[in-house]
Length: 115
Image (cartoon, rainbow, N blue to C red):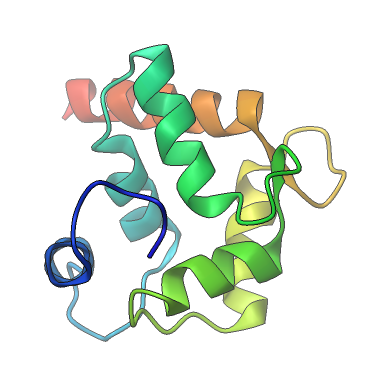
């Protein structure tokens, strides 16, 4: 469990919904849509961030992203997780920190508003 107030069946169902192309994997866009579904409220964003920051060090590595998704039966290779991290990692340190995560969510919301 990722520390969420929901049971594993509910989270699995939500991840199945996030897998919009039905291939059993979350790509970058599906991941962004999934994460951006949280409210932009700071506490909500922090809670969403903590779901992926498994070791609590304030940053999300490709391995953490892969493991967090694997816990919910979502298959993402380490390479795919690395690609997602690289796409979000603005300071190019190899991790997603909270500010980068928050910016990703806000950008996703802005993109939704333009569609």
